[in-house]
Image (cartoon, rainbow, N blue to C red):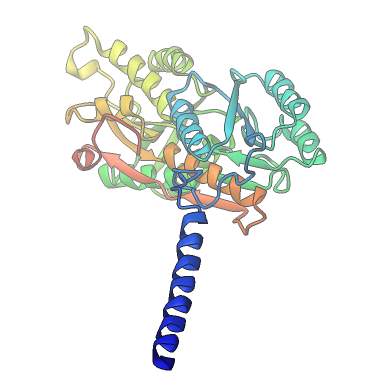
Length: 343
């Protein structure tokens, strides 16, 4: 009898423990929660629960330029994949417009501002207003003149881009020659590329026959180069600080050569900076005067810009300057990169 009572007691304890376990399992939240972010920066994004999403502003120098269209698309993709919002305003290469747009972003109280400046000096005062408002500033592509104007600068090593083009020209024309430089004095990225190009040619026997400031415009480059060719059609090379201006130079040379025999045609080596699909499409023709472009990866710049913004807002460590390394795309290696998109 005593033995039966002990067994009954043990069974009662076991049943009580089992009931407790079942109750805990039933009460536990077993629902599967979707991740709040899905992009490259899923560990960096907004984690504010049910609060309003982060809002970012992007003041862009020229949204008609394919380079900046690609950069903005990359930036927007990363921002939105991480649950934030991006508002883009096109300055149309007008500094007054850009400054007003920046003031508007301050009034809207955006959480961070991205800026690709019209000029390295013109946006400085407007950016100071942003900093006074406690809004982080991420400077993209072309660097502002004051190092402390922005929290972060992300762009390409444009001086290296110019050097790559110069070294390729020296390889093709070891005895030197004459060059035409197409620049944009407002853009530091372009002036850095021109500086790298000229420094590398300093002792290589090349003479600068002309400089044309075409403000980053394909149309202006076309008109200016066409006028230049009337008196300097035998120039050895045309170096352009951007692919857009290189395309304009190519348009002018092509038009100049129409109807002329080989002896009177212009046959310059044409270089650009950027790596645009339009440039690469022409470059893919082995007989084209398009010679090479130093690819500067706007897609990477946009992605890295977004990453830096989230790091700043999350109080994480970040690099104050990040430079992507350019690389030369020419007739010989174009098959490795394709012509349909940006790198």
